[in-house]
Image (cartoon, rainbow, N blue to C red):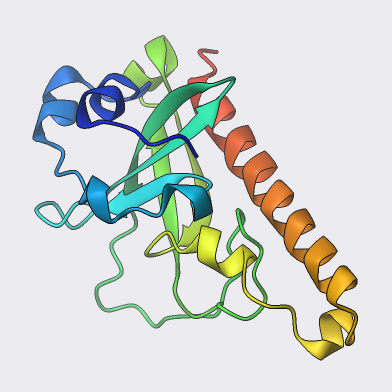
Amino acid sequence: MTPLTEKQIRASFVNASKREVAQATLPDLDAVDWDRTDYLGWRDRKAPLAAYAVLEIDGEPVGVLLRAADRSGRVRRKSLCAWCEDVVATDDVSLYVARRGGAAGRQGNTIGTLICTDFRCSANVRRTPTSAEAGNDPAVRELIVERRVTGLRERSRRFVEEVRRTR
């Protein structure tokens, strides 16, 4: 992912008000390993249910404001992240809901999906495949990681494009 500035990130949101964008607490951008990041995702440390994801679509950053489902008092269940589809990290997945962009969002229309709670998808898709997944062939392991990365980018992009739809 191309490194982003605070200004680029704040200008990228398609489903948030100016006030929501201004109040967002951004992560430490200097700590991001941009070469190993397929999207920038984080939870707002000042607003526990607010989260954000910024992807590159057609060379431009596109951000979405997400709301986490309130998990207080609920039993955690193993779930599959819809973005990285990692079968190993299944115990830290949350339901995130995004208001649609434009008039649809102002009318209250939303879309939801299951995503890794701490947005670790980029690391999950790059983990070394197990021998059950790839055998001992390094070329097969590399191919599996490439396919995982491509899949993560496609699935996260589809979600963000659906958020942007104004119908």
